[in-house]
Amino acid sequence: MRELFLDRIDKRPVVCDGAMGTMLYSKGIPLSRCYDELNAAMPQLVKEVHLAYVKAGAEVIETNTFGANKFRLQKFGIGERVCELNIMGARLAREVAGDDLYVAGAVGPLGIRLEPLGLTTLDEARAAFREQIASLIEGGVDLIIVETMMDLNEAHQALLAARELGQFPVIVQMTVQADGSTPTGTLAEDFARALDEWGADLIGVNCSVGPAAVQETLERISTVTAKKLSAQPNAGMPRTMEGRSLYLCSPEYMASYAQRFIQAGARLVGGCCGTTPEHIKAIKTAVRSLNLHRVRVPVEVLGRSVHTLPPLPVATRSRLAGKLARQEFPVLVEVVPPKGCDATKEVEGSQYLLEQGIDAVNIPDGAGATARMSALTLAALLQQRAGIDVLLHYSSRDRSVLTIQSDLLGAHALGVRNVLALTRDTPQYSTVLESDASEVDAIGLVTLLNNLNRGLDVGANPLGVQTAYLVGASINPYALNLEEELRRFHSKVEAGADFAVTQPVFQVDQLVKFLERARSFAPDIPVIAGIWPLTSFRNAEFMNNEVPGISVPPEVMERMRAADSGERARLEGLKIAQETLVEIRTLVQGVQIAAPFGRYALAVEVAQALGMRQPVPSTPQP
Image (cartoon, rainbow, N blue to C red):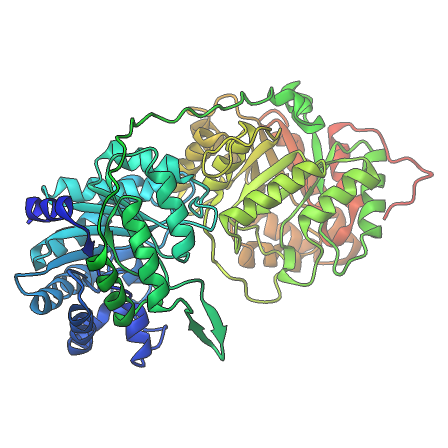
């Protein structure tokens, strides 16, 4: 029915249905349930919702398949049921719509981040969309609505997947914030131009915001594309009352905006979260009464020109960057954020390290998952109060993309210039469970930092200024899946990493093998090796068995077993660390030494194996 549908909207606006999830929730289905699975478990309930919208006057019925892709279904343990649930969703809608109404296959976002900000490749995303859309077509839909898209790249993959499967109408709807940009920062004009170029039949906006913001966004879109538009706003912004989300826009208010949408160029109007059959009934009445006088002015679609700034020379970004560029073999020592809000010990310790010739300190992010000062705050304090260069470990764990962007802009304003991009820092002192929620991984974080260095935000919009970060990437030469570790390191280098930091080195032969392979794609990337001075046999056992990514070889374990504990064990651990440091001196371009339990003097003793000057006698050793 492709030509029939497009011919219909050429003649007059078409009314789509409203929210499926809102209606199912109102019928007692908890939010923890997989709503797409109801196509099989409670088909009659789904049909009741469809029928209510048909009776209200909807001409397009969306399938109950918004989250029926393999990635979202896997979260409920039913990732293998993509075909079944989409076919059933399409057939249920068709049974209600009959031959007189249109059935639109609802395709929502995958619920994961795509490259370069996430692990999922564009090909994998397109394959997932293709699997879902093929099933919807098999089930008998007339068109596809790709909706609630935050990431323009993801919307593109969905559109490509649909086009690979045949010639039928494809509507692509982005979701926007109050200012008309997507949650990833893409401006309305920019995503409209892109979707126009990629061949979407209708370009629209749905979800997230109420009618007013959608109206403003449509008006902006209409200035850059001649394509027909679509609008399905929420019934206002939700308000929470006694644990329930309430949408306050009345049917009459929604209907008045539906008329404005059409005047702005929309030819498909309906509703998203919070809208009900009562809203659609009012919209239908308003559309029928509308007398279209306005003719859209032809629009010349112009490509977007993005002005990027050339990144500043690496050697000029920080003292650490300069030392790496000059091949001076910088030495860093770890300073863990304090518990509570008093950083006096850490400031004094950093001053001591600076006096002993240490080049910089590195600060782990979220060490311990306890009530510790943030690594970013401590980094700024140490630079300001101790005058030492700082390498900030920054993990994307539990942080949204926009939060990360704000943190990094703020850190730069505070003087931080060196960042090690991590998905999550090693929980060396973890005492409570940590969440694995991440919108982006380390590869995406490197990409984001590189964009900021070129004067672009996460949505590739010019900031007018640029950061000057030295961007680091973590590598683990002892990873169980070495091929995957090398692949990820390659991706980090391509994303813009300037240097790399290894996990603590105990087995030099494995480090050599890893570096030999890594040099094939990263010949000029400086590598800073991690060194951990063991303090006891018990410490060695813990490191070997309970710290992810660290492997202590049997010969080292035996040496620490013989030393056991106390001063003898400390000296043996120091000797092992010094031997390792001397052995890797010609293999890497710098070293990062841990200071177990805040023993900064121990780290300085390790560094003395390089021939550094002895500690200043008058300086107390923390």
